[in-house]
Length: 415
Image (cartoon, rainbow, N blue to C red; front, side, top):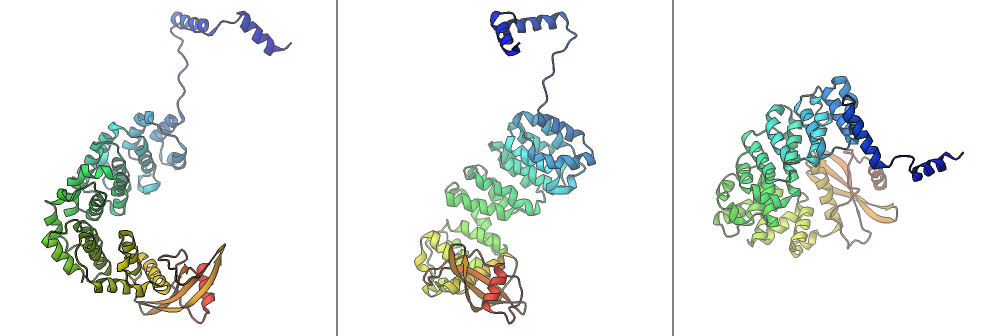
């Protein structure tokens, strides 16, 4: 017998009840026998996971930590997620690897209006746990509401948590929503004047001015204290301040400051002062551009800045050549890694083939702490009139060149 056909025939002929009759029968059954419960709705995987985390001990968390990335969390999981985040865990000392840190990061993507108040409520309980504080503040920085940003600013100003290296992660989130910067402009100015977050606040103000989200008039009251703090500021802070001052070309105090800063001992600060003067219409002497191009610490960045601002004609032509840019690129690579090269000397150049591309790698020795060490920069195009300001093979192993041939040094460093 074909059971499939018989089943279809029985259904069609009305032997089996249709869906409406079945529902009626079940309803009558449960009303007559109230002690019988309807089958419980099965828990979602995320519900099971969060409840397991909430009850887990130290050993149980070891296996659960690796599952966080695989669990799909939805807004309806927030009621189960909040208690887990509120409760201290044995693995909190693991920082970014801890389960609460990972769950705070997941919270940012599913948060709602209640989340802002939740973070404000529990933040003080995270004291001494810098990664968790940073993760919680990042949730506010990514918040969709104005309230979340104002609460973020209030916590930074009043509680001033020691975020250390996480400062950039927290405030850096605001660069992704520049339209929100005007809403917290006043708080940013206060952070920029005196707080552990001065640099990030200044960079946000500068970005707001460049994008037009913040108007120079909004800075009128904050300009004098910002000018007063310039002389004692760190070089990185001076650069951010100069980027802001460029929007006040008619202020006599700003003009005098730009004039004196063109002689600052730090080359990167001199470059920022020159570019601020150029943007504000302040006359920058030709000798300043020549000195910045002659310095391997600022040469390539000067070229990039002038190109982006539409003033490439100001770049001194005698430094527009492959060797000069290769030297500047290697210097930038070294400085970015905390080194301070004193001078360079060219050993030669070596032609390389990388797939379908050909080019020349420049091999240098650079002097640092009394030692001459080898490094390469490039590749530069085979056409010597074509110049690149950066090269993807630029590197050094901080070893002496010895008696090796140019090709041997290049091959060793490329490998």
